[in-house]
Image (cartoon, rainbow, N blue to C red; front, side, top):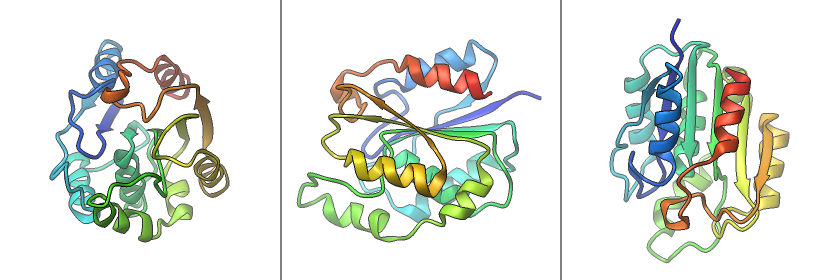
Length: 188
């Protein structure tokens, strides 16, 4: 059965931002069925809207279903996983977070529900065969130690820390993440 991958962009992002086109091509070249949707309302992402959209897009997930998320795309995936009752093949999060640093005044009200609404970590872990997160040591938004600890302790995730990649965004000029591809191919 063909492996399906859903790549979920971040806040204010798009399917064509930064490294997303690169990972899409790499996976398609290896015969994955890849979906990189434009998520609804990217400038004002809301939990229910994004989770419902992802749920409709995926249909019925299974062990041949994989997810890649950047930033709030990772939050979207985790919140989707706590709502389903099927196990997926794996989850790969880049610059994932549970709390944020350096929010602008107008960003606070958008981020607050994502930060304050609890995630059912046990359910997420039960529904993901493997979770890998890639963080940067100089991400201006993601508190590294706290985030890495939560991923390790609450989700039994493999945590990889890259050097000087910022938030892994197009603004950081990150157009490829070879380690991400390596980890995906290792697990799949």
